[in-house]
Length: 317
Image 1 (cartoon, rainbow, N blue to C red):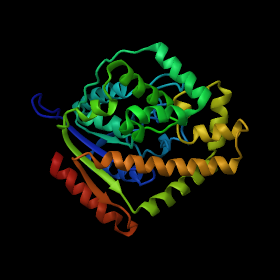
Image 2 (image 1 turned 180 degrees about the vertical axis):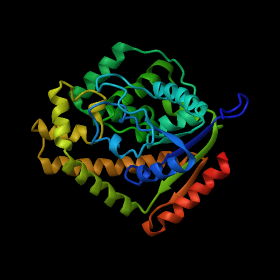
Image 3 (image 1 turned 45 degrees about the vertical axis):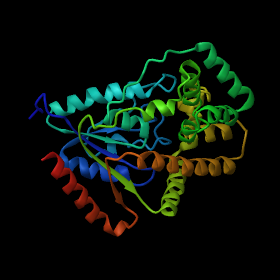
Image 4 (image 1 turned 45 degrees about the horizontal axis):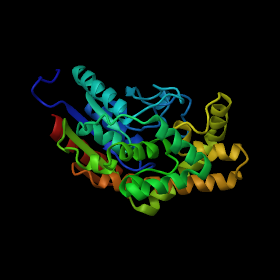
């Protein structure tokens, strides 16, 4: 039955760092609550970028409808505001079909913006400033641009990877236009759930997580990550595009362009992914509504699944 207009719509959310095990659990949980899954990953929106984004093939989705995958070409812009708009509409559509909307992913700001209905101010833009910053990054390197952000907004710099040049420039641009740090704007957002929210977070022993990350990257390479990046470059997608700055794509592209050895690219990718997981956990730790489940002990998986199913049943039934 569709939800009544004055009640909050249901929203199930599963978050956690990369490689913690969200995908497997999400499929079982989606079947249990009769849900449709919305990808909460800012990279899975891009077509032709499957292996490096750990996108679940349709053949492995076990009949569960998945949304927010393959909706953009790699050279098309994608923002948190667009993610929020699309998800808001999807949540209504899925709920109206009598199913539970279920966001699964690890892009903290994107997921949080939907859960709490963040309002994004239209600060405007300064194209000349953007070009100046892009030229600075090109000349001096992404790390040097990231250092400039650290000087004016250290919290945003901690959250953003130096290779995420577009978002680093946007954070600098917001400060340039308004004199207000982007991190302060985010801190000022209300954090009252917009939905009847059940938010589960997965965590595990840090060293075990790092081992799983390294194993996942080895598997991606076996599955053809190098060939995937090669094909993107052959299609004409520039290494400077935001999509191509993603983990796995930037490092392998640098190897393919002869800037580093294969071994060095793989080691860099593993290091940067470990750091990314650490930033993900830091982001999610400040979200007060997350119910954390420690999945370190895999022998307890069935018990953990049962516990999560009980949580969702208490919230939605």
